[in-house]
Length: 63
Length: 408
Image 1 (tube, one colour):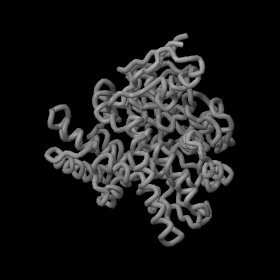
Image 2 (cartoon, chains in turn blue, yellow):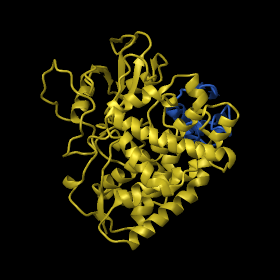
Image 3 (cartoon, chains in turn purple, green):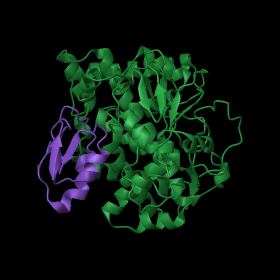
Image 4 (tube, chains in turn red, green):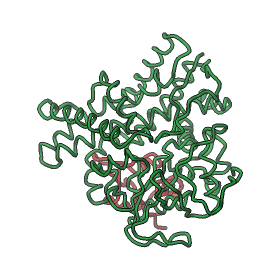
């Protein structure tokens, strides 16, 4: 699984961090930061949840 | 599903509609009925206009993520939910009623304090605020109005600290906020309340320009100094955060407590759980179940949009009913059941799209602290009246209760 974050689209809701805090973080302005580009299979469900709840559709998952 | 409402099929139903007094937590039966009919239906607003209404979950998300729908309240065809809001948003827009890129530029100026880690760092402070209020509650007379004694002061104290607003002024700003969220306030009343609040915040920002502190109004004052932001815009943003920061959470605390009192088995689950993940999930379910912002999100089409077999024409208004989306049986099994064990994280109680609630991480922490603390420290908590006599905000812009008499 490959995760792509569009920082320009991010609105800083922080929902990705709540869904998978080891995969996503926020910078000083609350904008999403990707910690793991290729999270493990065990994290897949939480990462998909993060993408599903992102209000700005700023998280894309490939594979 | 609710029983279909017997109405003239050609009549355009009104929106919003009051919730049913016999089932005060559920979305209005007429709105749920529209959900079963078609993805897009027409409704009639207070001013006679007839925008589209969106009631299904997937349509709600798809359309609120669609940049062809504008949040600009000054555009012709924009559906205003009340005379007061129409007047205020047309003359004094904040980022809530702007489109990108200006929306993103302004919103990013105030996202920092709402980042998860910053809000988590506030959790001990929120806990102290809640504990102090419960101490006072237990030491005071009973029965007591839980709104006045607990639900309103909790988020008010928190947002005051975050913004740098003196809590001692709470009578002033709570009274004026109440006018802003009253649906039947006239344009004049609403504009006057807004003007008083903006003047108040503007004065605070002016003082923080020379005497900055570690708070959000000081950071707005610094941006005014740097020429990034006008004083007027900074004051409007400060006012928005002050009002939005306490009205909504206060209603969630009071209405959520009532919903739990009416569902004792669910109440016991939350009261007795030591698992922060369970508590967090329970709060998501309460947010879904109650969806207190029940006047819909409003947008206007910038171009023709084909959706659900129909065409939203350029210039037509669209109202998106999150309270119905959160009770969409296609997405949430048995939506009328308050089930704190379900995974409700997909709910749209904070809206969807780029305008989704900025303060949601803070609201979550406040609710995660407030409900369990209240239930554990006041184990005999119960309603001091019958639920039929509780004054629900059927006419409010944000749903909740005006008063919640409780005893223990």
